[in-house]
Image (cartoon, each protein chain N blue to C red):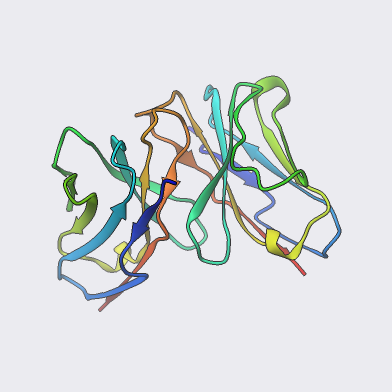
Length: 114
Length: 112
């Protein structure tokens, strides 16, 4: 069974540009999550989809970040315009259910904004 | 607000020794805790979990201890191997939602 995949693995962009990250969850997982780790700090929750609906977007830092999951399969996270403080590793995870269900993480996308 | 923290950013141990990685949490209502291992270039990988109605749970070479009185969680790795070198995160999921709250991570370095 394929795990969670993310694309690209690395992205280097200039401040003010736009970047779109993609996540493909494990097939059949209705729950999809975005997290990020900035500058060696803790991994922080960004948002949670159940199928195509945003269940919790309390961790989204500001309106420069837009997440979508059209059709309830893969998800994209767009940063527009990117700022220096957006640099970090963005992880996607998926799970079959909530609570005690394990969240399976992708390898992450390392975003560098220069 | 909620927070989950680790005591040490880096832990260096000799191969074959036991490792203990600690974590403190602030939300006394937390009822589910998970330890993740993150190797270089990979995403966090589930190691072991524990619910608040338990104080100890064992896996293969790993043991998680939970002390609810002092809100402390620890991960013990027996006979540490070079392959155990990674960043270890504790996480809490106290509200039965999907949102995980992570600690800052401890880098475990295993010396041959």
